[in-house]
Amino acid sequence: MPRGDKWSYSDKQKRQAEHIEESERKQGRSEQAAERIAWATVNKQDGGARGARKSTAVRTTNKRLTGATKKNTTAPRKSARRG
Figure 1: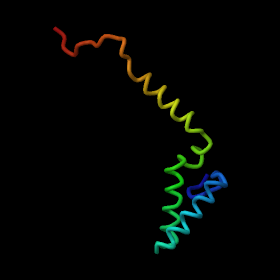
Figure 2 (figure 1 turned 45 degrees about the vertical axis):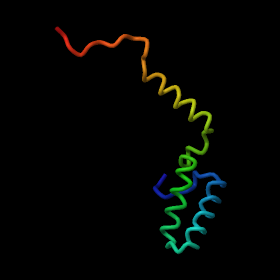
Figure 3 (figure 1 turned 90 degrees about the horizontal axis):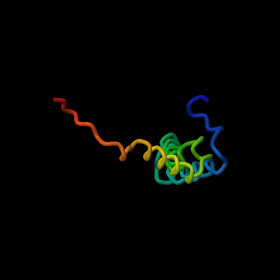
Figure 4 (figure 1 turned 90 degrees about the vertical axis):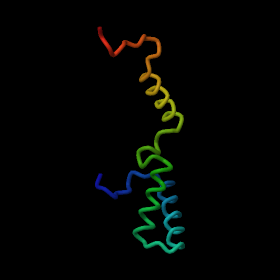
């Protein structure tokens, strides 16, 4: 997918971006700046075009699992010094 291609966004995301862009234009932003801000806002809210397909429950579960596997609290720590 070329950069800037919006085909993989959902219809809802496209409507949100249009609304945000209109709002930014009313505040006096240029057309290019308004579009950039609109899509940046949609990406931040939903995690981008592909991120919108995942539910928030899946993302938080994955986050918990990866955080839990990084810590191994049951194994004793080895001393850095030898001697």
